Length: 418
View 1 (cartoon, one colour):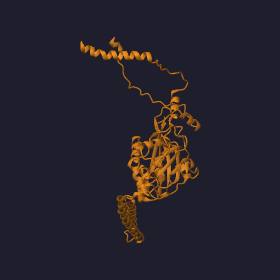
View 2 (tube, one colour; view 1 turned 120 degrees about the horizontal axis):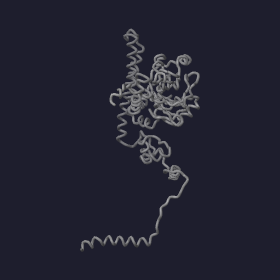
View 3 (cartoon, helix red, strand yellow; view 1 turned 90 degrees about the horizontal axis):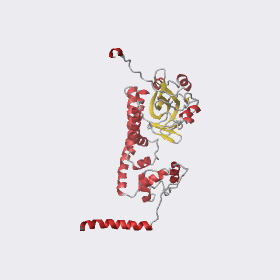
View 4 (cartoon, rainbow, N blue to C red; view 1 turned 135 degrees about the vertical axis):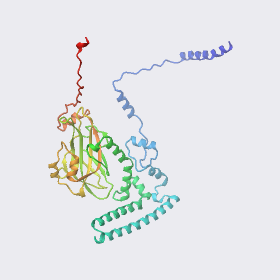
C-alpha cells in the first residue's frame, strides 16, 4: 500500500499545479489571417528584409564562411586563399622578401638551379644556330635536318619550363591570374590545370552524348573552349533555354602553344528530324572562317565578326521542335593549315546550311579540329516565340513516334470450337 501511495503522489502534485496555472494564464489562440499575397511573395519579402553580410574586404578574407558571404552578394574574390591569408600578417611585405629563414634558403637553392638551366638554354640556342647554318648535305638531307631542328626546339622549350617551374613567384602569379600567357611556363601551368579536370569532364560529355562518331570519327581537343550567352556561362552538355541562346554566342578559346593562327568556327546541330528517311540530318547554325586567335587573343564574339570577310553562315537560333528529343548543339574550333586564309566566297559556294557535313568540310578545306564545346536544347515555353521572331515555320508542328504495328497473327477458325 505504501508503494502505491508513493507512486500516486507525484502524479497528483502535477495535476494540482496544472489546475492552478489554468486560473492565472490567459488562453492563447493561434490563427492565420487571410491574405492576398502568394507564399512566394511572402518568402521574397522575408529574404529582402534579412540583414546583409558585414563589410568584408575581398582581398583579405581567408575563411570559407566569409567567402560564402561575399559570394552571396555577387562580390568576386581577389587572388588565392593563400594570398589573402598571408596579406594581413605580413604588413604588405613583398612575397619574395617574407622573413622566413627556411623559405629564403630554399629560394637560394632554386635560384642556383635556375641559373644552371639558363646556361643550358644558351648552349642549346647555339647548337640550334649551328645546325641551321650547316649545309644540307652535311646534315644528312633536308628531312633529317628539319627533324633534328624540331627535336632541338622541343628540348629548348622544355628547358625554359624547367627553369621556372619551381619558382614560387611564378606559382603565385599564376594562382592570382596575373601570368603572362606569352611565356612558356604560364602556358604549361594553364594546360596542366585544364587537363587535370576540365578536359576530362569535356571528354566524358563527348563520349556520353556520342559526338564521336555521330559528327566526327575522332576528337582530341588541345585548346580550352568556354561558351557564354550574354552573362550566362554554359558548362559542357548543359541545357540552355531557347530564349537565352537566341542571342549570338561568345567564345573564349585558350590555346597553349605559342604563335597566332587562323581558325574556323562551326556550330552544328546533328539532331534535325528527317521525315523522308525516318532519321536525322545535320544543320549548320553558324560558320565563320579566318578568325585569329593566340595565347593572349582568346575572345571570339560571334556578333562582332566581319560579315564579309569572316562570316559564311550567320547565326541561326538553336531550336528543337515539339516532340523531338533534345538537340546536341556542337561547337567546333577548326585550325586552318599553316595559318592560310580561306577564300570566303569559295566557301560560301560549297557550303549549305541544311545537310552540312563537317567531315567533308574538314577534308575539303584541310582544317583540323582542336577545340570543342556543346550544349543541349529542347522544346520549352519560349521556343515558339523564338521561332516566330526568327521567321522559322513549324512551331505548331508536333512530332510523334510511329506506332509499331504488331506482327500479323493468323487466327484460327472459331467455328470448330463452338
